[in-house]
Amino acid sequence: MLGSIFCALITMLGHIRIGHGNRMHHHEHHHLQAPNKEDILKISEDERMELSKSFRVYCIILVKPKDVSLWAAVKETWTKHCDKAEFFSSENVKVFESINMDTNDMWLMMRKAYKYAFDKYRDQYNWFFLARPTTFAIIENLKYFLLKKDPSQPFYLGHTIKSGDLEYVGIEGGIVLSVESMKRLNSLLNIPEKCPEQGGMIWKISEDKQLAVCLKYAGVFAENAEDADGKDVFNTKSVGLSIKEAMTYHPNQVVEGCCSDMAVTFNGLTPNQMHVMMYGVYRLRAFGHIFNDALVFLPPNGSDND
Image (tube, rainbow, N blue to C red; front, top):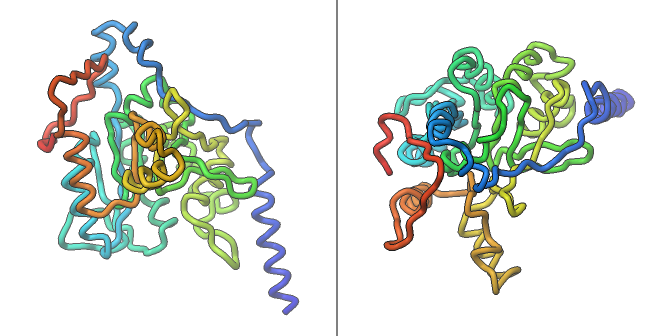
């Protein structure tokens, strides 16, 4: 019994140390906003074209065999708009092409996927987006949000959640890392004191919390992504659930109270809802309404679904 109590105390102290100690510099959490549309109009056409080509997003989707129907839907919908998307699976699956991580542990899968992506693509992509197969992402909105962010700086953003002293980006809404953050994370993966393969000795913490712990040691801190009106752009719920909540709490402003019109992600979707979202985002048009966006992000070659 005494031994068990001692182990528990050591584990708790370990987490306390992680929460407060060994920071590289003082950093207050802050909210990151999308660029102002008026500022985009001030950029010359040549510069806009160069910007649209310079943003390259590599998408990481963590999957398991039980997710095969979601896997198929994600593969056929929004991932075609990533500059490159790859699926990382817990085991070998013959039905779809994927990179076998050979583990069911989500944190180990995430670590291995990030290491693979950085080692192979650090010179080709400047932003890395990780998501679950229940997430739907509008990559063009992600690129717009990142427009004025320098990938050589340590960005770690999405929908932030606070757990005690730890602030982290929830995986439900997707996680974005700049190539600099990837570099710093990769440098810690072989240092168990700072970025262990397992969490506590008695209980485990979720993979998104564990990622935040590792990044904190590297001086990289979670930042909440919002539009110009302060609305979250990385959503941890589906559109349907968000609208239902808006009808309850903002009955006179259902659309305005629901979601940002520059939303990047929604989560908790079924395969059918993925295809409905794809139709609504990329196919459906209201006649007479013309959206003259100042900047265009063209989908990569082979994206034939919009």
